[in-house]
Image (cartoon, protein in one colour):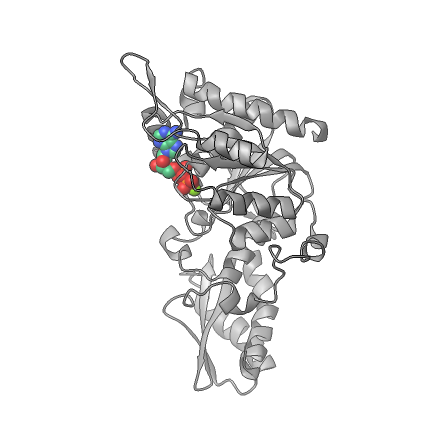
Length: 363
Ligand code: ADP
Ligand code: MG
């Protein structure tokens, strides 16, 4: 990072908390001929006062630290994507590195009022993580818990659409209020930015979004906060694991996920940060014919069992491949809500009961 860039970043660091308190944010895009180009995010974007925010706040703050800067302008788009390491956070602790596990996690702080936090994770995308996270959250609510659901999938935030919630959260003072839907509380980056835009965020922006969801959202008194993670072991996972003490993780896999490599990495990450893995859910496990009720297995079988055996973690349940589960999720009416007595919904309740068993001492 060049000297002038450091000074500009220092100016941005000064103004950023103010913007973030209003649900916005700012990122440096480039510096060219002593002109700084920045990108305003979230609530700041398209805000009628964006230009005065720029001249009164951002420009003043930047020039204070970097007097050589002539002007500050709005960039057309967000900074180009880069991997976390290329974006300058290479010195951030890498929990995968041997011996690095200790220090980074000393900064963990629980969330006031939130009794337990559970992550829903997977090695690959599209295995039904969000489907499981949503139905698990709703099932826990049906078991009598007060539940929050945090969408930590910054690159593919589909909790709101699968829950059928469109309204943007309100802000109370410095705090963001989660949206309440089907009697649970939820927060997602999709409330603030067009999901297509979040896809190109840099690592540090993802980290900041996750931190904000943990620290600046008024979760209130929750028995459990369920966190829907993106696939793999990226910035969102690391940030979550470093920021808060997780009570446990639920791993979602499919029957045919024979390559255990991706799952292994996820489980190793949780182990390294001393997060208990509650178990594995095998999704799209089998198919029940709606006409004759016979169960068939359209995919190769045994992914869940293989994961369970390989890592000595319990198999929490097997969820069928089911048109109702898909339709309900994709239309924003989860099956637990629309048809709580259906056998498919009961499967999620059984998983929730097992999860509840693991956390009940903390409630
Ligand atoms: P992930 O969060 O792992 O990417 P999603 O939960 O978004 O996965 O699921 C991917 C797609 O598969 C969605 O369209 C979802 O509705 C569908 N789906 C997930 N689980 C099931 C299931 N058990 N039966 C039928 N469709 C499912
Ligand atoms: Mg998902």
